[in-house]
Image (cartoon, rainbow, N blue to C red; front, top):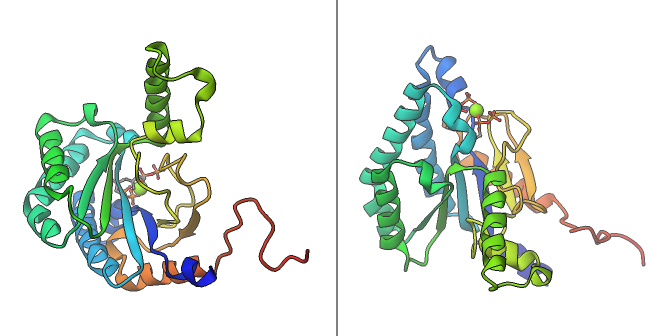
Length: 243
Ligand code: IPE
Ligand code: IPE
Ligand code: MG
């Protein structure tokens, strides 16, 4: 049993933070930090291949990030377009299955089309399950789930008394994706900024001061090592406790 747990593959989720500070430290505009952030994502995707990771979820743009200056938001959307266009085929060849979670109705039509195309193209892949959180907010996700469930109840498809955790899970953007085991946040901030609120109920958190553009395979391996040193109890007593 213990061996089984040690060998099972992980769902790692990353709050990729610190692009702006990385750029500022070099006297560069913030957008250069975002560009460097894409390189860090590519490095991470390579590193994942050598690690016991089956699912990777990355926070690329939050619902709250829309409140940034228009120029920065436009640049981020432009970078996303560029990334999807240039890397989709190679991600597909690697066997990566792509899914995008977030408020799709807030995104430009061409981006929605690119996302749908990426999801469709890679839907039968059996390698890494890559989930990109884009225009994503945990509260918005839970609110949308509540709305969906309420509609189903009013149509008579679900009985209010029959709503359980499984029902809620089915209505989240992440339906069908296992909960994250480990959530990593870079840049030294120790908060979750509306990321996977429901799903991370029992995740382990690793906070590192490394700014996202500097994040490397070594940092990822270190975070996994730290995860393996933790004892997940899920509210029960620990493995060392006496009967
Ligand atoms: C993370 O880096 C990228 C996004 C949130 C889109 P930031 O842009 O938040 O960088 P800092 O936190 O200002 O350094
Ligand atoms: C969280 O980072 C969102 C992403 C990394 C995409 P933020 O930089 O937006 O978070 P706050 O504002 O520091 O909480
Ligand atoms: Mg930030």
